[in-house]
Length: 453
Picture 1 (cartoon, rainbow, N blue to C red):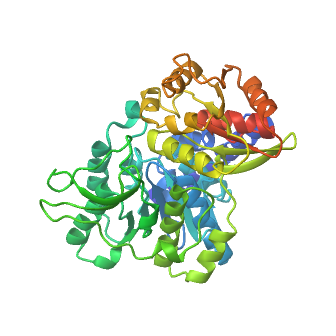
Picture 2 (cartoon, rainbow, N blue to C red; picture 1 turned 30 degrees about the vertical axis):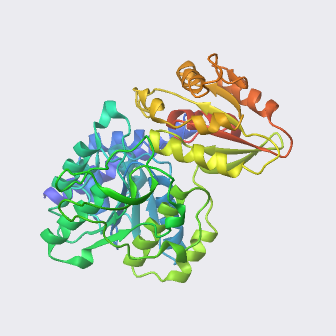
Picture 3 (cartoon, rainbow, N blue to C red; picture 1 turned 45 degrees about the vertical axis):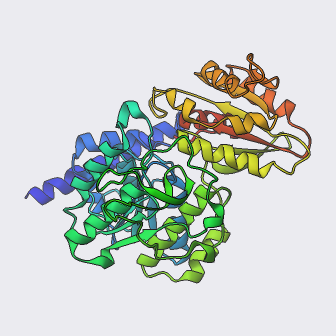
């Protein structure tokens, strides 16, 4: 009887969600990727669990601070190229309502979901709440960095919550970053608890020639997660990700299953090579061969706002999401490297918002290494809700000019700021846009004429 009632409530939830999604799209209020899930969960509180349980070959949850959207999209490409039918929260709506909406969108009117896999990007803070509802076939943990301190707290806080939620899983395969000391240590603990080494797999980079010259300022976890002693690094690729060991207790980086030298570069930036290795290791855990994975990496098209390239008014624009210190440092480094041998200094639009999706605390910009960008003589346009905060950060990046870089322009109207940056762009060059999350959605809507969420 209870099962029949659950099914009836799920069918009612599907109908309501479909109606809400249609209304949202007709009113041009977005893609209907969150509200339908919220309505459905009020009608059937177990909607997420009931839908996820129907996925034939299981769910793949992608969690972590950076890289979730790109990695999930690459995994989807790999699986669909093999003929699998995949449900995916492609818009990046990664809280419980967004996950529910993504599954509902592919269900029929009775709430039946005919899909082989569900690839779900999950917000790192809600992962412990999701795991009791979705028992994943694979949990892919990308990394843990400081992000939205007002919502999440420090990295150690999230890690402890993850440990309590993941350890009880009985059949899940955990794919973890070997280069992140917190996640690597967690993986070693899981190996001991689960007594099955095959259920814990590691990805990482094997290219020491790409080490940074020094440990960057925006670094989170350089102390041993086992004993608290300072880790000794052979080198770092970004933030605290690298090759390390503890001289006190012997804790050391686990060896990644794949050698990153043997795999093509995904898009631009070393952070995207991490995304490629994470997806490749996960795909191999599903039994997919190397050749089709490599083909998918070579043919991959960027997710919205993540190294995405657009043509606007006949000019090239590249959007590089920059929502926390580590991600921003890597996009800054990428811009500098891409333009090093160009005839003109880069033209960059930085858009800083402080809304709920971004985190209301923007003090993290002082951990971003903007000095390297300013040193290039870049043409800088700043916009967003906190435009003047970003302008001040850039002013402090040029010690020779207390008033700030001579090429700095502040324009609080985002549409005007975009046009300003395009007007300043030399012929044949690329405009690099570095926005926070909500700003990225606004930028894309202005540039493409349509919203995402």
